[in-house]
Image (tube, rainbow, N blue to C red; front, side, top):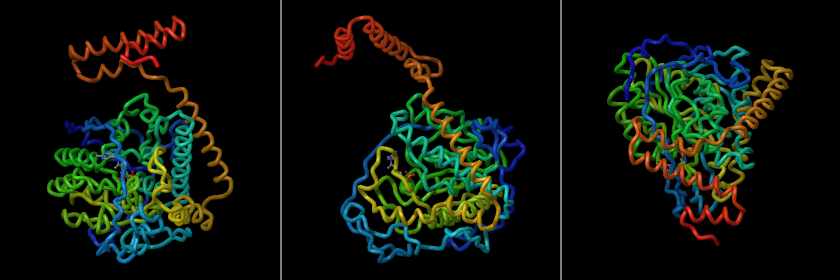
Length: 474
Ligand SMILES: Cc1ncc(C[n+]2csc(CCOP(=O)(O)OP(=O)(O)O)c2C)c(N)n1
Ligand SMILES: [Mg+2]
């Protein structure tokens, strides 16, 4: 990894939200714990331009999670003792992600009431509140469009963020432009806050590219599918930032399932020992494909930080105001050089793991229904309406904007050109390689054989193609 020290001296700009956040972020017990154009329309930031380079790793693996058939043991310290949740494979009835755990930092109740917290506060103008609402609505609209596009065969796969909008928009709007983000594959709301055009998120899922955006344009790294590995990339990057003497921060997103990965444990250890300016933002959406969180941990996830020597805090991940306040405080802490911090955003994955998944096989419908009542968008809408901070005209205009975004996404994705099949050979070695050249030539000849077959009759053409692959013609 190289880090140019000039990047470290870039002037710091704030995100689109200007508000005060108070808060020590030092306890680990949980008690203290605008838009631009229509294309994009999502950036409160004026751009990246940082010249740092960060490690990249994007490969793909899929494993199907299986229930072992064992019953959950009681879980000391989780507040879930005796909850009696059965194995997901056995019964789909258990109360999952119970509210009886440690207290959450909350500034907005599910009913849309404003709450105070002794350590965290936000003071937002009506315009800023409407901005957060708009971010969440447009992100959800984009996400729904992407799911529909997958169902129509336009995308190979989609990982929906449904239900996690507040965690992502709240934390994303807490970032400064020169902060650097290492996402997983579900951070469409954070991408939105960074000013990445949502259409660009879809190329990889359509199979026409391996990323779709320049990470350094928006300080938003490429999506990472190797679970947990981006926490190490973030830690290394943050160690570089510290060596530069910069006052920017790094944030790594990961899931409850990822928290079990060795990479995450190593990232925690290194970041703590090297005092790296990194916030670990865990979206505990309570499922890792079909594995519930109680299979990952016997203590609340935020408490893991204590063992590594840095603080952790649990925030209501469906409360955009609390996510903003807590993430901002965490970022301030790491910028002050006080070492890393873990934020656990307690939320819920309302949809399937991806479009390849069927959650009805392993979780109860009632569970999802209970979380619909805590919908992050609905609760902010309730507050805006009660407080008289948004009128019907605002909601109607946003509805129109949503539809326009959906249309643009649809049309742009369908028009994405297929990649040149030979391009993949160009990026294996920076300076080329004789073996790759040979393989490129072989593949080019193979492709050309299909072109020839177009001129022949259908039967002969099929035979030619099969013959080239060594297959039979049955
Ligand atoms: C190293 C590795 N192991 C396994 C997988 C397969 N896999 C893809 S997503 C996933 C679950 C991740 O769950 P979580 O971290 O909670 O994130 P979420 O999908 O819930 O956002 C797994 C096991 C993978 N991609 N990489
Ligand atoms: Mg998860």
